[in-house]
Image 1 (cartoon, rainbow, N blue to C red):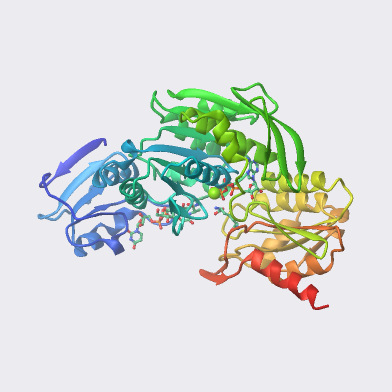
Image 2 (cartoon, rainbow, N blue to C red; image 1 turned 60 degrees about the horizontal axis):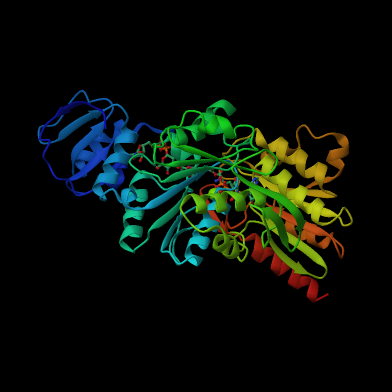
Length: 477
Ligand SMILES: CC(=O)N[C@H]1[C@@H](OP(=O)(O)OP(=O)(O)OC[C@H]2O[C@@H](n3ccc(=O)[nH]c3=O)[C@H](O)[C@@H]2O)O[C@H](CO)[C@@H](O)[C@@H]1O[C@H](C)C(=O)N[C@@H](C)C(=O)N[C@H](CCC(=O)O)C(=O)O
Ligand SMILES: Nc1ncnc2c1ncn2[C@@H]1O[C@H](COP(=O)(O)OP(=O)(O)OP(=O)(O)O)[C@@H](O)[C@H]1O
Ligand SMILES: N[C@H](CCC[C@H](N)C(=O)O)C(=O)O
Ligand SMILES: [Mg+2]
């Protein structure tokens, strides 16, 4: 931690570390972090009134108080992570911790790794979008990557529960915000990078840099596993001190696979010279499986045992989950980026040999990257018999405006294939009722989510439950 200046008693003990003045308790330490909405420095007086005895900040306040210790640092976010790690006994140093980054595939890969290592007989932690897990114990997740304090507290809990391995998602927001500062990783994995989060990162280059930062910070002893088939796979690891390993299907790589068959029943891969059948669907899952296998081998596991256990695993909740009834196949998938949507629709085309119709229900999140809206819309229209545009967490935005943003840029031919129905339940219903035996319906964007977020309120809503209810209605006909 780079100290710039200190003032007051530096030997004070603190009862907790806080970055939100509203949470501060008596004799706590408050870190003033500049945020995206407000600057934490503005809340230093409030934090002191709440009982903070130590203030860590980037800029010292003009007026200081006698009984308070002030520490000025170059980066409050880095200091927060490092102090939180120290406060919780630096748990990551005693764990084999692997961070996974990339636009798509983080949850899929981390979840498979968690399940695989449990099957291999280890005690394992998982930190992911869907949930955090200590072995089979589920702890709810609010973010893909928790904030610095929650992260260290969680890692400590995992260690105390006997975990030897932890697999965690490293979101680009978390990397930029230094949520992982003070965390020592055994290895990092890059899945892929494509259009997303440009609202936050500003442009694609800054988004690439955010992901690359995870690899730039790795120690020599760590492994850096990258996707050789991704255009930016090499860039990710070009400045890392870690040992570089690659995986790929199209390009020559250290860990290789070839898709032998891709059906609704699963994938058959030629992987590291073994022909293996897996229960996951879609070519993109070949990459996730390859990344999982490579990670396990880099962690010292035995190849044949890993492949055997991997071949028995199912996908993460809400990732290409299928519900079949009345001759219809409904796929619930978390595709919420242009690339994911393209991949999932390409999979549907491939597994259905172009015989059946494909109906797609899709929306775009409010208060999130607006530039991906017309791109997702174009892909959905181009690759579906008919696309139902609808709401997916409109948050503070007007749902009709989001639908209009999606439609902007569609050609008249594409527009004729689109029906916009803001109410998601009605859109799913229309898609299912409009389909005939043999057809496929993709319900995209929400996957595992069990809510629809509208103006700060999360209303219960679960795509899979809705699909099942509508299919049950068909029974009564
Ligand atoms: C855009 C973003 O990532 N924001 C995160 C960020 O908040 P922020 O920078 O906006 O905070 P702010 O409101 O400006 O406040 C600045 C500082 O003042 C403090 N404060 C504020 C008010 C007050 O009264 N007192 C006070 O001390 C705040 O605690 C904060 O430390 O830091 C907060 C604390 O860690 C996060 O909860 C918050 O996540 C918001 C809620 C969020 O929606 N984040 C999403 C976009 C996100 O992080 N997503 C990624 C996954 C993305 C993916 O799909 O790949 C994730 O990892 O989940
Ligand atoms: N390796 C992959 N390449 C491309 N698309 C993928 C890949 N794996 C999964 N997908 C698609 O992306 C969607 C999201 O997958 P997943 O939840 O694993 O990604 P994520 O990186 O964790 O996303 P988030 O950033 O929201 O946490 C899936 O539902 C699927 O449509
Ligand atoms: N972690 C992603 C999830 C998006 C999922 C989609 N359902 C939406 O709300 O846009 C994000 O915060 O951008
Ligand atoms: Mg995720």
